[in-house]
Length: 439
Length: 133
Image 1 (cartoon, rainbow over the protein chains, first blue to last red):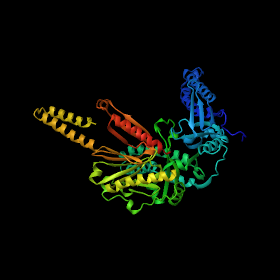
Image 2: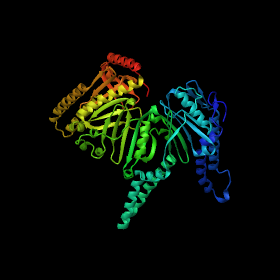
Image 3: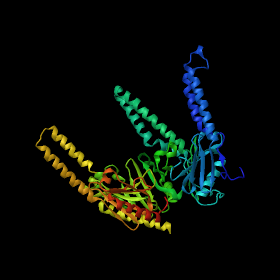
Image 4: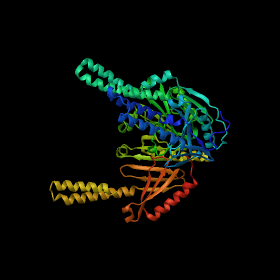
C-alpha cells in the first residue's frame, strides 16, 4: 500500500480500465462477428471479407476510443470537492461538493475482480452517480479513496481511518434461494405452468398452446430471480460509526455505505408467499433528484435492499439499529374506518397509518404487505387529498412526502376529521423534530 | 382552467347540431355556460393559501380537495410563471418546489405585484429557515 494518501494530486485511473469498461463491447462484437465468419463459404475463407473488416475496424476504433478516454481522464480531491476532468474533444470538468455526498459505493464487476480493480461510485444529492464514477482503481486503493471521501464528507480530516465496522447480519445463501424463488416473478408463472400441465392432461389440444406460453414466462421469472440472486448473494450488513455497510454480490461484488442521516424512509415488505415462513424484506430509500437523467440502470437503484430476506425478529432488530425506537406494530386506532373497505377492497386488510413523535408509519398492500417508516425529521411536505368517492364516504388520504424517490408514506382512507387532524399534527411534529435537531 | 367546461360546452353544441335540433342549441349553450361558470366560480373560491409562522398552507379543489403544508425551511426554489392569458389580465402563478417531487403547492391567479412580493417573502423566510435533506 502506498504511503501517499490517494487523491491529493491529479491522478489517472488504472491503465487497465479501458479493458474492463469496453470489454463487454468487445465480447459483444466478437459474438456478433461469429455468424458472418460462418457465413463465408469454405473455399472463400479470405480475411478480406467486408463484414469482418468492418467488425475489425469497429473493434480497433472502440479500443482506441477507450484508451483515449482513459488517457484524458484525471481526478483529484481538492479542498471540499471531488474533481473529475474528462473528454478529449468536449472537455468536461466536474466538481462534486463533498458535503453533498449521499453515499460512496465500491463496485467490482467480474472482469474488474479478475484484474484486481474496483470502481468507486459517489452518490451525491444533486445528480446521483451520474458524474461521480471513478472506474477503475486498484482493489487496494478503492477503500482508501472511499474512506477519505467519507471522512471529508463528514467534515473530518482526510486521513481519518474508516471507522471499524461491526458485523450485524449475514444472510445465509441457503435461505436466499428458496425465498427468491417464492417471489411472485417465479411463483406466478410456475403456478400457471402447473395449471397448464393439468389442462394438458384434461384436454391436450387446448393445453399445448398454453404450456408453451407459460414456460416462456417461467423462464423470464427464473432469469429475474437469478439476477437478484447474483446481486444479493452472500449479503452481509455491518454497522460503522457513519452508517450501514452492505456487502453483496456473486459475480459482481458491491460494497455500499448508507449514512444514517441520509435515510429518507425504510420499508418492511412481507410478500404473500413469504408469510407462512415469517420472512420479511427491508428496503431503504435515499435522497435523489432527477431520476430520468441516469443512463446506467444499476445506478438508478436508489431504494436499496437493506436485508433481502430474514425472519421478522431479525428484521425488527436491524430496523431498530437503523431507526431507533421505531415500532412497526400498528396500534388499534391505526386502522381506517370500516367504510374504507368500499374504496380499497383489496388493501383494506392491511391498511393502517399512525405516527409517534419521531416517525410516521403507513402500512398497505394485499399481495405484498408493506410498512413504510418515515422519520418526521425528513418530511418535506404533508398533503391531504380527497376525491369525490372519498368525500362521499367522508374519508381522506394524507401523504407524507420525503426527498426519497421510490415511495411515500400515505395514510389512505382515514376518517376525514382524523385526516385533518393528522395533517396538522404531523406537520407540527415534523417542525418540532427539525427544531430538536437544530438545537 | 376555463378550457375543461368550454370543451364540454363545445361537445354539447356539436351533439345538438348533429341532431339538427336547432331549437335546443341555444338552451344547450346557455346551460353549458351557466354550468361551467358555476363550476369555475366554485373552483376559484376553493383556492386559498395561508402564510403561517413556520409553513405555507395551500388548499384547493372542489371535487378533489387538496391541502398541502410546506415548511418554509424545505423550499428549494420558487417559480413565478405567467402564461399569455395570465399576462392579459396581469396575473401570475407562484409555485413552490421542495426536494420531494410530490409536493404540490401552486397558487394561481395572483396579481403580478402580489405574486412577486409573495415570492420574495417566501424566499427570505426560506433562506432563514433552510435545513438540509
